[in-house]
Image (tube, rainbow, N blue to C red):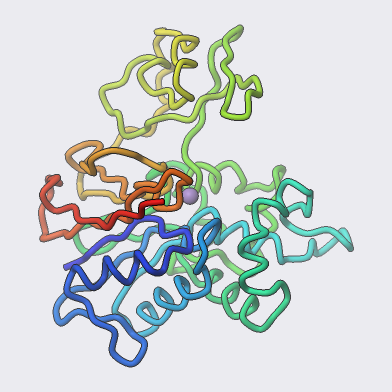
Length: 310
Ligand SMILES: [Mn+2]
């Protein structure tokens, strides 16, 4: 059975505390449990103070066959940042703009850009699958979207890992798999009807909304929109076009991270759980896990977490 752990973002102290609280112990540098395995939901890095240690804990568990892990958008970005464009010399698969550098700086400082540690971590990130179909559960960083998962097949190997030659197609905005990769690792956005817009956290006007794709009863843009605070009043209660939301078949529970949730951990839907409870937030948050016992219907009782206060 699995203990599924949400986005850690470099908070190794909370990870060790959470593993310990679930009955895992550190034996020769590898955390293990007599009966259970961990499933990590990605975003090991970005922001937090112990990113290298966090990756090492997860990597050693995966290598010892004591854990599974999927790729988060920050692992994808870390690889794309360090990968030279094969045709345009001097450019990279992720643009080295000031904004991108600033977002990535904590990681680059901690690994020491270009070092052996940096290379070792990137090498492991490349081995992470984009999604997992395990016995009884599904796992993906942001959005289980069957159509986009299907179109990603062309770029993945048998283990759902990005093929060596496929990074270009996934990382560049005009790449053949870019849109699908974005949905699976960063979530589904949809365009608002003509004439509608809202302002994002940085006060920029936007015409596409992030969606709460797990809200399977939603019928309007207003129902699915994830926008800052009061901006929700600008989102129309007009019906969403048929086929723009993925739905979910509920055949197995699916676990996701990515969404920086707050409040009391609980399933988003009886078969959909997000385990990202904002451990890396400036305001503090939780590192959250779900102790799966084989159930089809997820329950708040099986969540556990450690708090990070600031
Ligand atoms: Mn993420």
